[in-house]
Length: 184
Image (cartoon, rainbow, N blue to C red; front, side, top):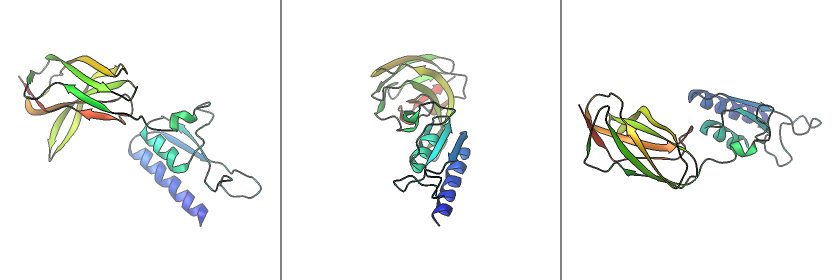
């Protein structure tokens, strides 16, 4: 029964990782070859995880209580240990300002994560949702405060655009600015 549960968990993690477009390889190894069980001395399954150290890989590693080391990632248990912590707050652009498509303006934020950030242009899609339209500032510095010149891409005019500032790569921590309009 425990082996069936372990296999079902591994399958669910692999399906979830595939659904979000991540490559994740999970290899289960017995902790003791003599007992024939796939458990550590503490009763937890053991596994080796390799692949992109993004959110899905960290989630899989935490679900499986993995060791996090493998031949593809030498000595990398910290890669899967924890998601970025801290907070990001977008301080500019402020509310009530319109910008022209292909125009530029300054974006600013505070960042207590200690990680580089990406700045994305988001557009409202209706029903309180939005989607990323374009990466406008890749890999901005990791300092406690940040500022960058944003040049808007050619997008349709509209009243419901915003900037998202999120940790680079996985976007595990992020914040969205107030909405602004883009005019012609």
